[in-house]
Image 1 (tube, rainbow, N blue to C red):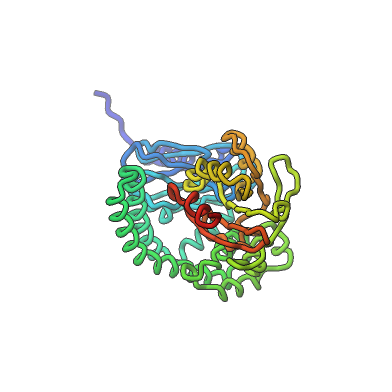
Image 2 (image 1 turned 30 degrees about the horizontal axis):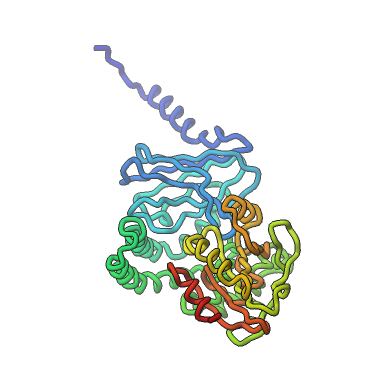
Length: 400
């Protein structure tokens, strides 16, 4: 057996080489690429980690990687700084994501000890990521506890919809468990939001700051969930006029100072909508007969499930009622979806960001959302959600 003696000089050289390899990982990232490398302790191999990007209200999976020896990675080209989301739908993971900002030529390192994604550490030179980390640090203790509750809730949802689909008895049991979990998780979530808003009172107005305010502003209509309307308005006052003119700024303004809302008994509100041929359309084109507005998205499970029944409704009541389907999807995704699915009728879109415009006027809080307008232009009925037979039943009740 050959023996080797490690001298202090040789040891120093080895250390220098190791350090060089460690700190030059960033140098291996091309100027037009990003590289995300993750190392997760205490997790078994075969877990799938996904990298997502936001497309309106829909999350598109860009890449997936399977955890091997506790490691995962994502590499691709990128031209500008932007936010991505990392999450997993494996059991034990919360139904949420980790915000990760990527930029050209940047190396991003992620370290975690468990499945609680929002508690993972993100090491990066990207300024937006460093600001994101400061938001996370505002309430890390509460975040860790919240992630545990969210993971438990998400597991119950998986069991209900995937393991026991259609099992009414199990569904009842699952919702009881979820309700009990939410009684514990909601106060924690509200505490986290409150701490983040307190941080925002002094923090610089940055893209991350604007991103957070957009989230809070979009939720102002859910006062029982986020009871911080005045705090949001106070933060809005910190925005410069230039901030307010950005796309996010204009959307925030619409949420903070929404247009007039209408309900049952009020006259309908009209607006500019566009069909699949890019032609300008208006709800008032069909005034004089019943009009059913259907607010929906291709990323909404119940919305998609309702499509066959909606087609039956359209055919059954075609002489008395016109259906206008108003999608909140981005233009390209919306057009591709209705073309692929062969969807007929009045497929329209406001082509706005977020749930603004008519969605605010008609107080759309969740989708699918339906508004039935009588021939005289007054709103006759409003309802949300879908279950087999519910759409036919609701329309029949109103038009009999």
